[in-house]
Image (cartoon, rainbow, N blue to C red; front, side, top):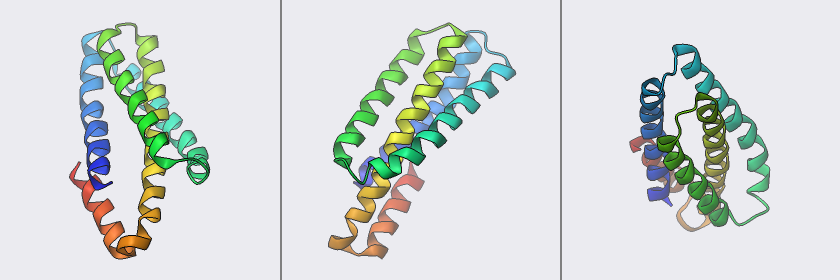
Length: 132
């Protein structure tokens, strides 16, 4: 689980660096970059609210796999698209995938508490995503 947290945060950080640089290469202005950040952030925020409740009712691991597949597809799609409108759409999809991923991981951490204890589970989670 902790390696999943590490990879999730690492890929989010790398995308946060690479996507704006790529967007500038295809003609994005500072306004476009801000709009991409806003679209991604809003879609993440809104998705995470609903996913927190849904992650309690579905298999968290399947939701994690689904979110990771969507995130991977979005990452590959970013490199193939030069239309700024589509980059905005992909920013929203990236936010959706992130909003599915993190609530599922956080639920998994709580689920794991019984076997290792609250302190160990939260420590592992915080160290893992902080290193990513």
